[in-house]
Length: 225
Image (cartoon, rainbow, N blue to C red):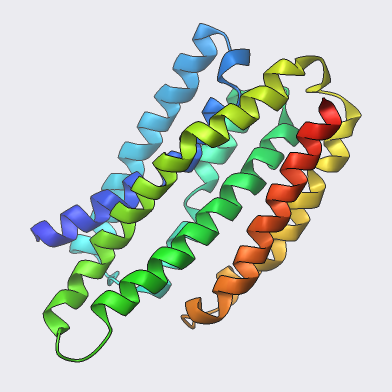
């Protein structure tokens, strides 16, 4: 029981770093009331999701598996994202751009962590007792990695959104934000539709995707300068 609760707690908490990044990207542009509204909404969503996932995984019909966790992560970010779009306005296309960058980081970190943990815990049949630890370890390592990336990503978004705030609602963003989003959609639909664990075959294409989005991000910063 305790193992299941800890695992679900870490999984739900792992949803929050990308959501917080969505907030941090616009924080200097927000008034105090908006900040309270965004963070308060995040807190409510976190509690609601935690209670729901606890029920489904601990007392309900869901079982711990990579495939199920992957499908949860494919959709569980949606309430946080929609709440940010509704409360942080009028920056719809900037929100899409932030989402593209954060999602690429999420996909890459999850892929890398899953491969490492599968190698450690599923390396051979002599360590079956360790296999259960892969689920909480996956979420814990993901949270640590994403939080390590947070200062760099926050600094980047604050520069392009705040330093050039007179362009935040310009038509430029309407077009440029679509490019990384479309690059990401192909990978996203593969994740959503596949019932097979294909981490070993996806590391290279996901690394290339992340590199492409980093080049786009740097090009945007250079262009704005």
